[in-house]
Amino acid sequence: MNPPDPAAGASTQPIFEAVLDEIDYGIVMCTRSGVRHCNRAALQQLVDTRCPLAVEGTRLVARDAGEDTRLHEALQDTLARGSRRLMTLRLQGRPLHLALVPLAGRAAAEPVGGALVLMARRMLCPQLTAYWFCEAHRLTPAESAVAAALFAGEPPRAIAERNGVALCTVRTQIASIVGKTATRGVRDLLVKAAALPPLLALAGRGAD
Image 1 (spheres, rainbow, N blue to C red):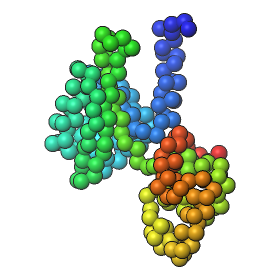
Image 2: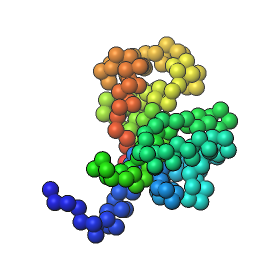
Image 3: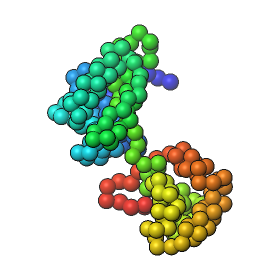
Image 4: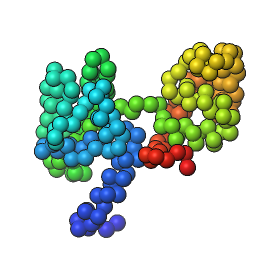
Protein backbone atom coordinates (compact mmCIF):
# COMPACT_ATOMS: atom_id res chain seq x y z
CA MET A 1 0.00 0.00 0.00
CA ASN A 2 1.35 3.42 -0.95
CA PRO A 3 1.67 6.03 1.83
CA PRO A 4 -1.08 8.67 1.86
CA ASP A 5 -0.47 11.89 -0.02
CA PRO A 6 -0.20 14.75 2.51
CA ALA A 7 -1.74 17.08 -0.07
CA ALA A 8 -4.92 15.03 0.08
CA GLY A 9 -5.49 15.86 3.76
CA ALA A 10 -7.69 18.89 3.12
CA SER A 11 -9.87 17.02 0.64
CA THR A 12 -10.43 14.10 3.02
CA GLN A 13 -11.40 16.25 6.02
CA PRO A 14 -15.10 16.56 5.04
CA ILE A 15 -15.23 12.79 4.57
CA PHE A 16 -13.59 12.26 7.94
CA GLU A 17 -16.09 14.56 9.62
CA ALA A 18 -18.97 12.78 7.86
CA VAL A 19 -17.66 9.46 9.21
CA LEU A 20 -17.64 10.84 12.75
CA ASP A 21 -21.24 12.04 12.32
CA GLU A 22 -22.36 8.45 11.69
CA ILE A 23 -21.11 7.33 15.11
CA ASP A 24 -23.75 7.35 17.85
CA TYR A 25 -21.31 8.29 20.61
CA GLY A 26 -20.67 11.97 21.17
CA ILE A 27 -17.07 12.66 20.11
CA VAL A 28 -15.16 15.84 20.91
CA MET A 29 -11.68 16.19 19.38
CA CYS A 30 -9.34 18.36 21.44
CA THR A 31 -5.77 19.60 21.12
CA ARG A 32 -3.69 21.72 23.47
CA SER A 33 -5.18 24.80 21.81
CA GLY A 34 -8.76 23.72 22.48
CA VAL A 35 -11.69 21.97 20.83
CA ARG A 36 -11.11 21.19 17.17
CA HIS A 37 -14.26 19.29 16.21
CA CYS A 38 -17.50 17.93 17.65
CA ASN A 39 -19.49 15.28 15.84
CA ARG A 40 -23.26 15.51 15.43
CA ALA A 41 -24.05 13.31 18.44
CA ALA A 42 -21.84 15.48 20.66
CA LEU A 43 -23.43 18.71 19.45
CA GLN A 44 -26.89 17.34 20.20
CA GLN A 45 -25.83 16.66 23.79
CA LEU A 46 -23.77 19.80 24.35
CA VAL A 47 -26.62 22.19 23.50
CA ASP A 48 -28.70 20.62 26.28
CA THR A 49 -28.21 22.77 29.38
CA ARG A 50 -28.80 19.65 31.51
CA CYS A 51 -25.65 18.07 30.04
CA PRO A 52 -22.69 18.27 32.48
CA LEU A 53 -20.36 19.09 29.56
CA ALA A 54 -20.25 22.23 27.40
CA VAL A 55 -18.03 24.15 24.99
CA GLU A 56 -17.19 27.76 25.79
CA GLY A 57 -15.33 29.41 22.96
CA THR A 58 -12.70 26.81 22.09
CA ARG A 59 -12.57 25.27 25.57
CA LEU A 60 -14.28 22.09 26.71
CA VAL A 61 -15.71 22.73 30.17
CA ALA A 62 -17.83 21.11 32.84
CA ARG A 63 -20.90 23.18 33.71
CA ASP A 64 -20.26 22.52 37.41
CA ALA A 65 -17.24 24.60 38.48
CA GLY A 66 -16.00 21.90 40.86
CA GLU A 67 -16.15 19.27 38.14
CA ASP A 68 -14.40 21.57 35.65
CA THR A 69 -11.09 21.33 37.54
CA ARG A 70 -11.24 17.51 37.39
CA LEU A 71 -12.03 17.57 33.67
CA HIS A 72 -9.22 20.02 32.88
CA GLU A 73 -6.64 18.02 34.84
CA ALA A 74 -7.70 14.73 33.26
CA LEU A 75 -7.65 16.18 29.74
CA GLN A 76 -4.23 17.76 30.26
CA ASP A 77 -2.92 14.43 31.56
CA THR A 78 -4.18 12.67 28.43
CA LEU A 79 -2.63 15.31 26.17
CA ALA A 80 0.69 15.38 28.03
CA ARG A 81 1.21 11.72 28.97
CA GLY A 82 -1.07 9.84 26.58
CA SER A 83 -3.07 8.33 29.45
CA ARG A 84 -6.44 6.69 28.84
CA ARG A 85 -9.17 6.93 31.43
CA LEU A 86 -12.85 6.79 32.22
CA MET A 87 -14.42 9.53 34.30
CA THR A 88 -17.89 10.69 35.28
CA LEU A 89 -19.07 14.29 35.41
CA ARG A 90 -22.27 15.29 37.21
CA LEU A 91 -24.59 18.25 37.04
CA GLN A 92 -27.32 18.39 39.70
CA GLY A 93 -27.00 14.64 40.14
CA ARG A 94 -27.20 13.93 36.40
CA PRO A 95 -24.17 11.78 35.38
CA LEU A 96 -22.27 11.76 32.12
CA HIS A 97 -19.65 9.05 31.61
CA LEU A 98 -16.63 10.00 29.51
CA ALA A 99 -13.66 8.18 28.00
CA LEU A 100 -10.50 10.19 27.32
CA VAL A 101 -8.36 8.71 24.56
CA PRO A 102 -5.04 10.12 23.30
CA LEU A 103 -4.44 10.66 19.58
CA ALA A 104 -0.87 9.85 18.60
CA GLY A 105 1.02 8.50 15.63
CA ARG A 106 1.49 4.78 15.15
CA ALA A 107 5.08 4.88 16.33
CA ALA A 108 5.43 4.69 20.11
CA ALA A 109 7.87 7.62 20.15
CA GLU A 110 5.51 10.02 18.38
CA PRO A 111 4.03 12.69 20.66
CA VAL A 112 0.36 12.91 21.50
CA GLY A 113 -1.24 15.30 19.04
CA GLY A 114 -4.68 15.48 20.56
CA ALA A 115 -7.35 13.69 22.51
CA LEU A 116 -10.80 12.32 21.92
CA VAL A 117 -13.45 12.82 24.57
CA LEU A 118 -16.04 10.09 24.03
CA MET A 119 -19.44 10.68 25.61
CA ALA A 120 -21.67 7.84 26.75
CA ARG A 121 -24.51 7.17 24.34
CA ARG A 122 -27.93 8.35 25.48
CA MET A 123 -29.87 5.30 24.31
CA LEU A 124 -29.34 1.57 23.89
CA CYS A 125 -29.59 1.82 20.11
CA PRO A 126 -30.70 4.64 17.79
CA GLN A 127 -34.34 4.75 16.68
CA LEU A 128 -33.48 4.02 13.05
CA THR A 129 -31.41 1.00 14.09
CA ALA A 130 -34.34 -0.25 16.17
CA TYR A 131 -36.71 0.29 13.24
CA TRP A 132 -34.67 -1.82 10.82
CA PHE A 133 -34.01 -4.46 13.47
CA CYS A 134 -37.76 -4.87 13.89
CA GLU A 135 -38.27 -4.88 10.12
CA ALA A 136 -35.59 -7.53 9.61
CA HIS A 137 -37.29 -9.82 12.12
CA ARG A 138 -40.78 -9.17 10.75
CA LEU A 139 -42.23 -7.79 13.96
CA THR A 140 -45.75 -6.44 13.81
CA PRO A 141 -46.27 -2.69 14.41
CA ALA A 142 -47.46 -3.43 17.96
CA GLU A 143 -44.45 -5.68 18.63
CA SER A 144 -42.12 -3.08 17.15
CA ALA A 145 -43.52 -0.44 19.51
CA VAL A 146 -42.99 -2.77 22.48
CA ALA A 147 -39.44 -3.59 21.33
CA ALA A 148 -38.63 0.13 20.96
CA ALA A 149 -39.97 0.76 24.47
CA LEU A 150 -37.82 -2.06 25.88
CA PHE A 151 -34.78 -0.62 24.11
CA ALA A 152 -35.59 2.74 25.75
CA GLY A 153 -35.53 1.09 29.18
CA GLU A 154 -39.26 0.86 29.87
CA PRO A 155 -40.40 -2.13 31.96
CA PRO A 156 -43.35 -4.23 30.70
CA ARG A 157 -45.78 -2.84 33.29
CA ALA A 158 -45.04 0.76 32.25
CA ILE A 159 -45.48 -0.19 28.57
CA ALA A 160 -48.86 -1.76 29.34
CA GLU A 161 -50.03 1.28 31.33
CA ARG A 162 -48.91 3.74 28.65
CA ASN A 163 -50.63 1.75 25.88
CA GLY A 164 -53.76 1.11 27.94
CA VAL A 165 -53.54 -2.68 27.63
CA ALA A 166 -53.28 -5.54 30.07
CA LEU A 167 -49.85 -6.58 31.30
CA CYS A 168 -50.48 -10.10 29.96
CA THR A 169 -50.91 -8.61 26.46
CA VAL A 170 -47.47 -7.00 26.63
CA ARG A 171 -45.94 -10.20 27.98
CA THR A 172 -47.46 -12.12 25.05
CA GLN A 173 -46.00 -9.58 22.63
CA ILE A 174 -42.59 -9.86 24.33
CA ALA A 175 -42.72 -13.65 24.01
CA SER A 176 -43.41 -13.25 20.28
CA ILE A 177 -40.54 -10.77 19.91
CA VAL A 178 -38.15 -13.12 21.71
CA GLY A 179 -39.20 -15.99 19.44
CA LYS A 180 -38.86 -14.01 16.21
CA THR A 181 -35.45 -12.59 17.17
CA ALA A 182 -34.12 -15.96 18.37
CA THR A 183 -33.18 -14.54 21.77
CA ARG A 184 -33.49 -16.19 25.19
CA GLY A 185 -35.42 -13.41 26.90
CA VAL A 186 -35.57 -9.65 27.38
CA ARG A 187 -32.02 -9.43 28.73
CA ASP A 188 -30.63 -11.32 25.74
CA LEU A 189 -32.75 -9.14 23.42
CA LEU A 190 -31.25 -5.98 24.95
CA VAL A 191 -27.71 -7.37 24.66
CA LYS A 192 -28.36 -8.10 20.99
CA ALA A 193 -29.75 -4.61 20.42
CA ALA A 194 -26.78 -2.98 22.18
CA ALA A 195 -24.38 -4.80 19.84
CA LEU A 196 -26.06 -3.55 16.66
CA PRO A 197 -24.09 -1.09 14.52
CA PRO A 198 -25.47 2.46 14.68
CA LEU A 199 -27.79 3.72 11.97
CA LEU A 200 -28.53 7.40 12.52
CA ALA A 201 -31.34 9.31 10.86
CA LEU A 202 -30.43 12.61 9.22
CA ALA A 203 -32.25 15.65 10.52
CA GLY A 204 -35.63 15.94 8.89
CA ARG A 205 -35.64 12.39 7.56
CA GLY A 206 -37.38 9.26 8.70
CA ALA A 207 -36.52 5.64 8.18
CA ASP A 208 -35.99 5.89 4.43
